[in-house]
Image (cartoon, rainbow, N blue to C red; front, side, top):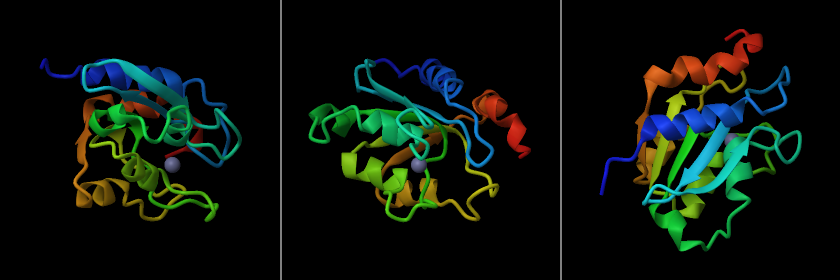
Length: 151
Ligand SMILES: [Zn+2]
């Protein structure tokens, strides 16, 4: 199988993040779920389906949780999936990824301490056997639509 084109898909996620309506209290994030053979399964961006909606959440909501392709899929997210949410009744994206059985996550930058003191999304995913890859070379582009938040 050819090596997946991480840059292509992360750039797609960055493009999605630009569609997020900017708000002062949260980052704009984009996410895309890709099958093992390189087909786009679903996309999402911050606040796509409501003011508290996260990118990964929006993408996963478009799929049947029992979709067998999720067991071999890769989730590309511009930002580290959250491990905690301000609204406690809403499941963090890290838990959603684990529940979906997605085995691989690619991110461009880690959650800074701007809104969440200590995000452990990457650590938690790895603890559960999810392969996490970071693309620091695309972090700058992934942050570009969040400049107003003064990181
Ligand atoms: Zn989240």
